Image 1 (tube, rainbow, N blue to C red):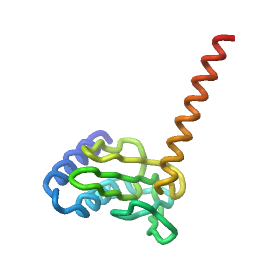
Image 2: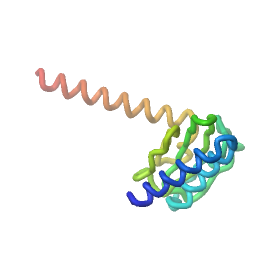
Image 3: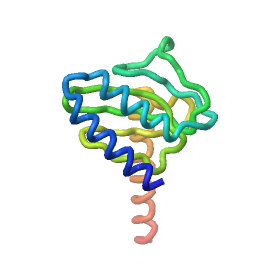
Length: 136
């Protein structure tokens, strides 16, 4: 899995640097590479390129292991959504944030932010509870 991640990192990095003027090409290549190497499963995920927001008409991909949203910031901002086999071992790509989740249609804009807020809140409550448990 590490070898595949390193390979993806090298391929995507070289591709991003070589196509700075082709904004849709970067997002499409990131999405295609991730889906080729990691695709399989039972979830349904949104599948689109250059889609800031999703709605009921946004295309969906079936049989995903996990949903992913990528936000590439340089040379231009490109948002893609798609699916991967698993959230584990995804490559780190310069100038690209990769959000991965494992529930039905979770790669919409609001759900990813909500899930992150819920996780942070739960962690904070747990830490505070443990702190007060030690005091008493």
